[in-house]
Image 1 (cartoon, rainbow, N blue to C red):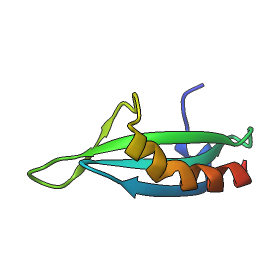
Image 2 (image 1 turned 180 degrees about the horizontal axis):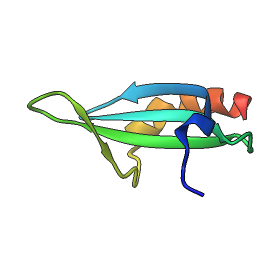
Image 3 (image 1 turned 135 degrees about the vertical axis):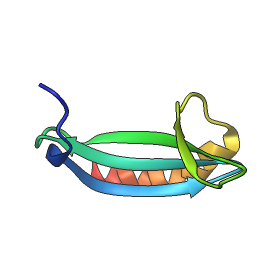
Image 4 (image 1 turned 30 degrees about the vertical axis):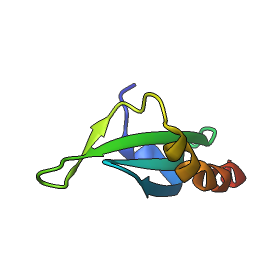
Length: 78
């Protein structure tokens, strides 16, 4: 079965912007399934300022401290 975006429900999404990147914490459910946490990273292009998707990979201490309050909010929704 292929992914169908109309079956995706978003319960929470907030972002934190740091040095050159934007991290988004979200809670989603697909096709009325269990709620799941998603953390995504977008790198900001220095010339255009537009975000582009990037692999999350590892977090710096500053990034973790920045999204920690968002993780706590998301945990309350899960």
